[in-house]
Figure 1 (cartoon, rainbow, N blue to C red):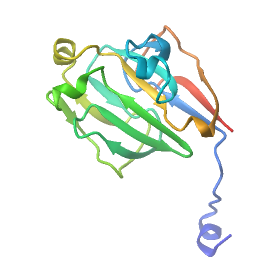
Figure 2: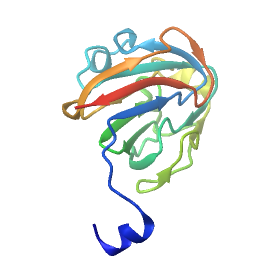
Figure 3: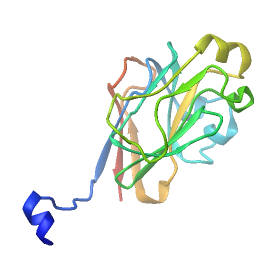
Figure 4: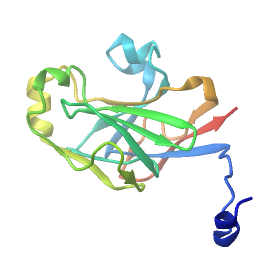
Length: 167
């Protein structure tokens, strides 16, 4: 242990379980119910989705923003050894960021409940295929299991929705 870690009493501890909180206000549904095979067939990873009731996205975890898509509708977040992708709506890429107001940049450290994005939900309803917003763990190789505790329930911001157990 180096001098600084002794000084600050910090030990690099590996998290064994990560809690994922709700990133939207809305109804939690199984990832297999997302009307897009990329998500429903878990091609990018496993997780769950929320059908939003308002146009706001907050961070489900404390971590670092590793990617903000240029079209503003998707975010990559790293929390410990877990990498999450949150994709706002389906086929929202075609909106080219219209109606999306991003509050963070790649490299930003974020806390649970911190606003990442506010957007025009009505515009998404009108212009995109669906408003459903999946959250998937993209590095499933590091994961033992994902347990979604609030399936088919309506959640508010920052309520515990799922837990990820690491290998």
